[in-house]
Image (cartoon, rainbow over the protein chains, first blue to last red):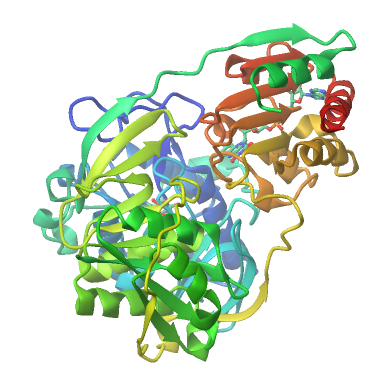
Length: 262
Length: 319
Ligand SMILES: Cc1cc2nc3c(=O)[nH]c(=O)nc-3n(C[C@H](O)[C@H](O)[C@H](O)COP(=O)(O)OP(=O)(O)OC[C@H]3O[C@@H](n4cnc5c(N)ncnc54)[C@H](O)[C@@H]3O)c2cc1C
Ligand SMILES: Nc1ncnc2c1ncn2[C@@H]1O[C@H](COP(=O)(O)O)[C@@H](O)[C@H]1O
């Protein structure tokens, strides 16, 4: 049996406008619609594929405010078996390191984990470091940025793809941590049956204290880094626009000459 | 002067441009010490380049294992040196791997992590540009040694002389149960075109290009301008162009002097990767396409008419 934990994050929908709150420079979560990050749908999909290929259990784990339950339900309705939701006011403003610590502590609560699957990078912070830090804290091999994942007995193989290095073939033995890229699969849509079933699936809600993490290590006031200043940049405005009347290319060339760009 | 550790990003015995940018940024905080982690013989090949950009020291952490495990040997080397040298900061490239190295290092050192910065100030604060350039942020580390990842192209590299005095570093043995082994690599074959994040001109194609074959319209324009080629996610997903060229929120962030978008609608996630370009040109059949809202010059028309004409006009000017 493969016991899998999938790390999922609720993020502001990238289709809506994203802002920082004026008071404390944290992400203004109220200003945008919140969704299960698309990359995490792919992480869930990959876990379900492994489960369906043999035996397995899929637990989704989210650290976030109470409304993150929507994201959790989405993952459950895709087919995950159960969920852990770490929700605590003390977490507001936590940075990457604190978040990773809390995630690691929550993963330890799940017995006999073989595989942790995460997204490679969240669409809100573009941190791209939580999976690596969780691997560090749990002492697991990291097989990150996977565009292909195979589990064969106790061996896990990954085709890692990054824009800077191309493909790297990785191998490690379980237990291990994998993060996936957007090229790994197409996530399924939850079926009606799946949505109904999700309502009955167990969601365990835990506080920071339940995890044995010191509240003094998390939250905005305890962040390892702090924002001194933040300001929105003036939005770009539309410039000139012409219809192509057979001379569109020439007009662009003239514009570029005028701007001394060519 | 305090030491600043700089992790050298290298491939095939040459440093990547971002390393020179890191060495430049490091000079705002102290004296740069380059850290080379790789297979035996690597440091010898890159030393001269490091000296030319101000590296006072070159720490050499070389072994066969260093090149055959992912991320962990680099974290081990920096961890050991950070404890030994008490540096003012550690600088790493904000690439996929660099972000992972810096995150793990910060966790190990219990230190402040500053991600994807585009400027390092002498008072220790850093500049960041977030949400695709919609917000500028100034931040600082609150604890320990600041671990800073610097966005490729975020800082301009400036040469400076450095002694590049070599010092060997012994790496701890890799724990195979905690590390992923690299069993094969298929590096990107960089063609003759400039790197996307380094290019001063980028020409990108979207779903409107219609097929992989027809992407040569984009490439020809790019080549006439000496530009890099980019693509939207729709173009990548449709198999028109390889994933490494994707521009946008989940692709690369580019900020060239000139960005030309051909057959790209301008979805918010695409804009997140290119809207800080100095000048934006858009060609799209649809007058309502959102790309026109941010374009300095837009042509409503068929890219297959406009782009080749522009290619010719550029070629004609070059004579
Ligand atoms: C979490 C997330 C992350 C994402 N990340 C990215 C990302 O990193 N990068 C990215 O690009 N997208 C990203 N997207 C996808 C994004 O939402 C859009 O789907 C995508 O950018 C659309 O690409 P496109 O403009 O090429 O295609 P379309 O939106 O289909 O636009 C094609 C355009 O071509 C025009 N056209 C067609 N034929 C011609 C012609 N002959 N001449 C001129 N114009 C023509 C059409 O009018 C149309 O405007 C992401 C989405 C999500 C949800
Ligand atoms: N608060 C969170 N709760 C659960 N998983 C998370 C959280 N933050 C990050 N992750 C996981 O780490 C991945 C990468 O996030 P990041 O490193 O923040 O870019 C995400 O796709 C998730 O899988």
